[in-house]
Amino acid sequence: MNRTGIGGAVAIVTGAGQGIGAAVTRALVELGATVAAVDRNSEQVEAVAAELGDQVRAFQADVADAAAAAEVVEQAEAELGPVEVLANVAGVLQVGTVQEITDEDWQRTFAVNTTGVFNFSRAVAERMIPRKRGSIVTVSSNAAGVPRHGMAAYAASKAAATMFTKSLGLELAEHGIRCNVVAPGSTDTDMQRGMWADERGAERVIAGSPEAFKVGIPLRKLATPEDIADAVVFLASEQAKHITMHDLYVDGGATLRA
Image (tube, rainbow, N blue to C red; front, top):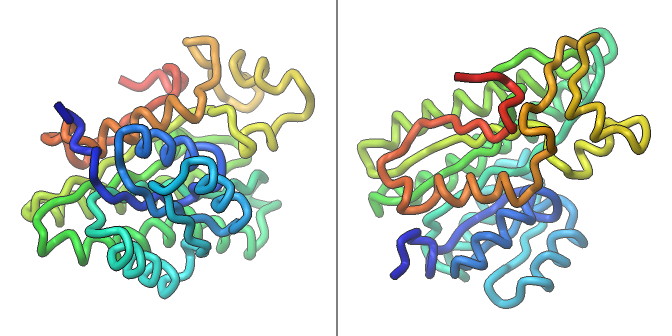
């Protein structure tokens, strides 16, 4: 019995070339989905597709490009079938204080983290509405709900993506389409490791940083990409069929959020 409703479905995953996006792609394939894996880095996304076989088709595209997003959705529907799941995972991180962030840093952060979510969600929603079904899940961040020192651009872009997804969920609810958010905390990815000064980076993240007003992780470990993928797949699945506009924090308790 397919309780998830994922088996046989067609999904689009952005940022599928590495980290959380690759983990979401693998999780969907394991449940029997066919995935259009999208990434700006063609080599990485093609490697994921080669690893997972015929159930994955690689697409090279920049999520910030509205025309490219529309083209990917059109091709995916033509070649793979009606898209029932969209996972917005593509994201970039620019660390620095507001005084250090350049105009280009700010614009690129929002172009990917916010406009990219808009581009793919709009293109997919247009096709889901007549069919009266579908699920959109946006991978945001716990930084969208908790201020982070030196991460203003990232936090603001993720907060915008979160509220966009919830607002879209309200608009699409009458059509039977669900829109939800997964908000990871510190996750063991290249993005996370890029912020570490040395091999003790994970230890410091888990312990917290009082000077940066950041608490540690109560579960005493980083998330894995698979931890986040499990949450994405759950919200995309029929097991979450009465859940929409929800913001699921997957951060080991790091935000002390009720």
